[in-house]
Length: 155
Image (cartoon, rainbow, N blue to C red; front, side, top):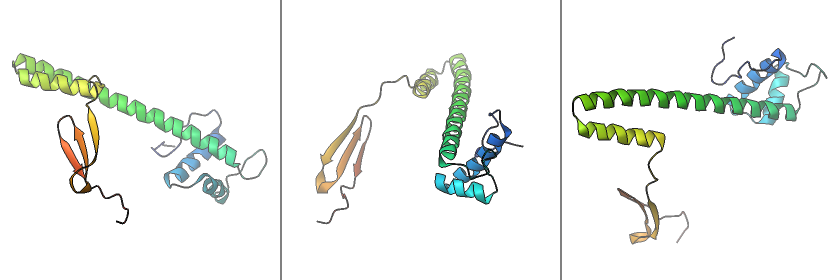
């Protein structure tokens, strides 16, 4: 059996739990509520083998929590792998830039690396009240954005 993004990983010691969680994961991918998942398991003839009855909402809730925890773990792992690959690319680019005495590129690489690692202090952001014609003015360190001040209320 192949595990996909929306399927449960086979990390439990009980194959019945794995089968149930795979189906719960499929239902979650279809944006079903937990109550709908309980009914969906019944429709798929997946019952609690100890009682012969439908799985409880508590069981489905525990499955959903376990699946989401696993999804977060996989997502964090993928982000970490992507960051490591980007850092390796930046290292190679910086090495080449130094060899070519391209100091502008060296600085760009270092800036990108610092951003990627979150080493820079956050940029100052300011939210002003209504400006001209009721527009809201958002100011960042390097630019200004004027947003429509219409808040949806009738005048």
